[in-house]
Length: 120
Image 1 (cartoon, rainbow, N blue to C red):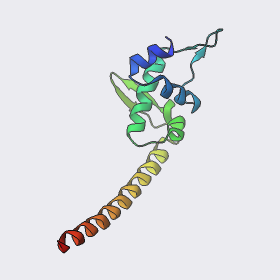
Image 2 (image 1 turned 180 degrees about the horizontal axis):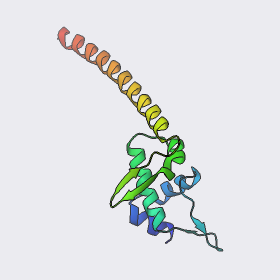
Image 3 (image 1 turned 90 degrees about the horizontal axis):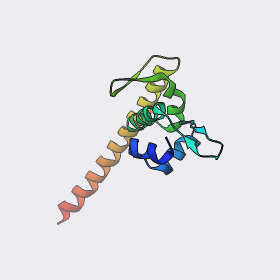
Image 4 (image 1 turned 30 degrees about the vertical axis):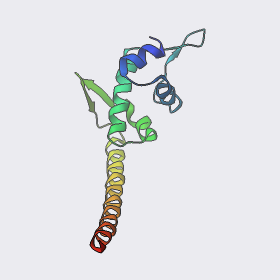
């Protein structure tokens, strides 16, 4: 299938599919005319990429872990390949730290808002 077909099949724009290719997440076959040719495995890979992005993983981490996931029906299932657990734990810690920082910011804003509203 061509890139437009993959975009239609996955709901992901052509531009984003090209970005995934630039990041090493997709490796379509190139036809003699230079067109990209995608297969069913690429449809699954895009679903996996989208799921991992939704989990907060950056594309560099996804590139290292994408080969560690497979489909179980309509669901992505990770396997415990080398580096999977340590990468996921590191990313979870990073996200937890970001959440903590955002909570501190939220509390500061709440304090400012409360101060302003008390002055009314």
